[in-house]
Amino acid sequence: MPLRIEDTFRSALAVTDRPLAGMWVCSGSPLIAELCAGSGLDWLLVDAEHSPNGLESILAQLQAIHGYPVPTLVRPPVNDTVLIKQYLDLGVQNLLIPMVNSVAEAEAAVAATRYPPHGVRGVGSALARAARWNRVPDYLARASETISVTVQIESAAAVEAVEDILKVDGVDAIFVGPSDLAASMGLLGQQEHPEVRAAVEHCLAAAKAAGKPIGVNAFAPATARAYLAAGADFILVGADVALLARGSEALAAEYVRPSDGGTPASY
Image (cartoon, rainbow, N blue to C red):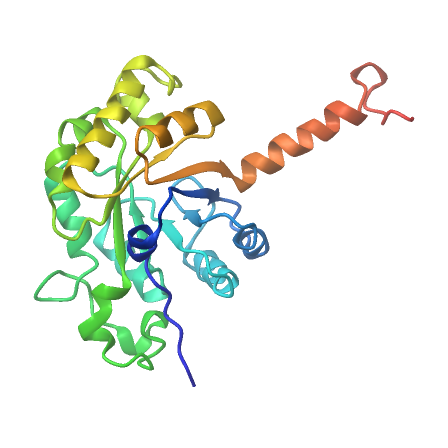
């Protein structure tokens, strides 16, 4: 029986001739994940840092998305060797590691994805979906080829260290999170502040100089276009839960009159 191991996000970035646009998948629902996978967007991010996702729901979403040719990153809640091992064994191929503030933390993230002697990943391929329960030939020798590592730059300390983080072997790309970055700069909730924008643009320039891809989170269309113009290689422009929230609010605004206690308007 033929086995399909998807190409990595690293490969998708290497062959594209344009920036890749993606969205967050935060609901924890395999149905919503599949719906997003068929949207035509270039990539997805299944989030477990700020969303109700555990191992079982991540597995179900990977299975739901598997039928669609869309690279999918998964973000664990923390840069932790044990969690990363579990995610990889589930079959996660593309990791977005949050809150990487230093070279040491970037190196630890990469080491967690590599088997000894190149890293510290625990060996359990016979029991794991990643190797299709030992049905993937030479998985142990080739595992690193099936995995990409993107680290998240989302603090002032990370921005200061970004040039060195970009040099870490095994870091395939960096991704800037302006929300946490703004908070670390004493500008909570001010992602559009000129100092925050300047910090993002500093990272963009550093990545270009290093020859590594860089992504940015930017829901505001004007901001997204500005970062794309500045050289972002990939971008997140929306989220499943945000789209549902704003869409349902728009329906309420259109059809529910505040003055009549919530009785739908009749036309």
